[in-house]
Length: 221
Image 1 (cartoon, rainbow, N blue to C red):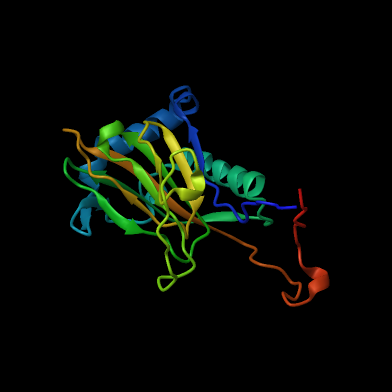
Image 2: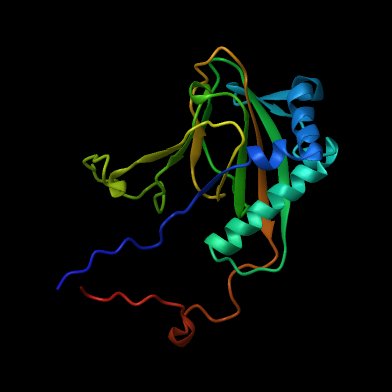
């Protein structure tokens, strides 16, 4: 008897919020504030390949309470409903927005010391630069065998792309490595990003106490 089981999957969430935003006057107004004032707020060039807002408190400094509440609700739906995280409160640690001019891109990185991160696609299209997730490894020193790619077998993927679609919100674990493709369009790519944390981490149970471990039993076929 043989069992094949994919353990500890990495789960991201993609949701289009166009109807929810365009049918709400307050959300539409705040959405347009970012688009209309993007370069007026002052930008610092991030890693010389894109522009990023000078603030990491964009929700507060640009007065975006309705977008903040919307994204907060989506974070909780993802963290509690999909990832099954147990906590009472979540909160944003940083929020900012990025403008990628034609030819700009963003190198591989993650968002340490956070739990859930999100990117909201505001202006652009498919060739404006997709969000690319990179296969996680246990550490930089881990041996990485050559894997024969099969487009029908997710186990062989080294990267997974979240296409740039306006109004798409992408949520993912903050530790997941990701990058942004080069903007091959002739217009600026605008996105809004945030990091969040939760008020409860881990468990009070001793991790080496076998009676307290939460395990999934592997059954043979």
